[in-house]
Image (cartoon, rainbow over all chains, first blue to last red; front, side):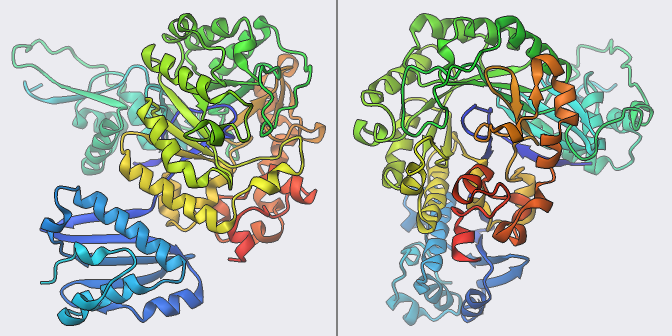
Length: 141
Length: 452
């Protein structure tokens, strides 16, 4: 008993047909713990590289191989002052898109920073700078 | 019935159609199409009358009220159901006709095709190949193809209404060159289809907008850039200002409109500004189009974005969605590969199934000939002539469509083995033009180019 698919938008000639663009970033929040998830295309070499950044503590950074996807997920707490009136969901979703672009371009500095963040290495984390700039809104507990 | 009880009823304008897998529902106001399993479909059938969840459960003969309640809430959120409460003053509650067992009675009594839909979801009807512009990016040759008469178009609309086609996408050429456009739009609306019109906008007038407003679902305009230089690079000179004026007219006239943006190497860097301009002018939908083969064979390879640029496009659209949450962002089915790194379950739920030609829609050219795709109108792909053969005959039995729907087993090269084949299949028009083979790998796909 379920909806199999949902497609939004009226059809226009000249556009072949269209489908809603799905951006593939999922952000959830529970009691101020934020979980961010996005996918990358699976490539064995990329997955091996990413595995080096797995980290777990109070927060976590995970990479899971699911079919032809790599699911990247991390949990974090946020410095709401740094978000300064912005919508936390939108801010995090934009950071995730930046991180995804960086990884696909071969830049892993965001993951290095997230690993240091998750492992609670305060001094290391404070000294690091990522491509996306996500360090500005993360709060270490 | 207790006062204060929640009742649910299907929104009256929702169109329903049974399919072998269950059924489909379409809501014209938002253009939302649902595919439903059997129980969910028959729930919507049953809710043509106001019922409580418990009554609906009895009517369907299901015991899982938790799942039913969740489904009702989902349909409510999507705008397919409305809810109200039995007021405390209204104790004279009529006895609802539950049509108990309707689902079991009707199930299996209708012969529905299992390998394709019972009818197209939409018909893309090019009313004319005439146009008042000569844009170099246009795939339509300005030929003198004979055009169906008003009566023939209306007969086609009648057949579509009988088959429960949901939408009629009217285009061309320039459809506003047809003197009977308004008549056709109004007729389609009266027959229960949602007519949408794709136009270059140059011929819109305040009077025409006023006349279209009650009948048209949406008007789609072209905007390829935020300034005249970018917009007109692959359109005719002087077409930027009329495009802006058309948006103004439509917004003033209260006609919902969207924008088609053809993305090329030259305008990708201006896409954010293009989107911002369209949204500022009132566009409620942005549809990004991939360049397709044009009469000038050198055009497509010159303008097609690179794999890196396509990856950038995916990010740009994602950010635009976040920036403009009330605007609907869509991509043409030739860009399905943009979403190929998403989870399959999510793609299924979003109905990202790749090429939809001959599967979800049918293309009809001005003389009434039908094809699976607007961009592939060679004799070998002609499915039939609708005015003489009829929609049902062509849709269910034309060999061109039967072969087309077997695409998965015919694909070659990278597209045959691609792990995302179920959600993409590449663009056949581009593959044919680039390689000479209809089923060859789509050479413009980033996955194909990068060997993923």
